[in-house]
Image 1: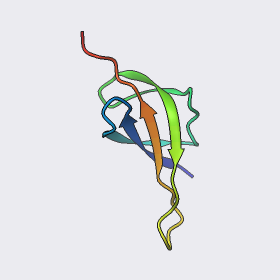
Image 2: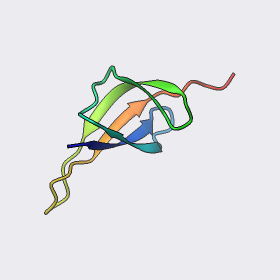
Image 3: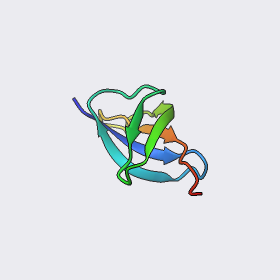
Image 4: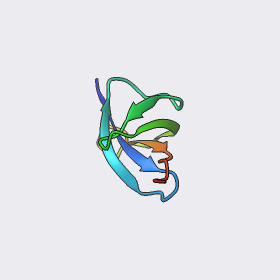
Length: 68
């Protein structure tokens, strides 16, 4: 069963993109965003499912590198 997670920016608190993982991502997992940037998960939050639903929302928090 695939996990659909929302990738969140820790600096702004805004969502970056949706991503599908084969299993629950670990807080130290590294992956590439759609932009090609390599990021490391800092925090993984699992919420409560909505009433009558079985899918729980998953948020993966990452810090983007500032463009220099």
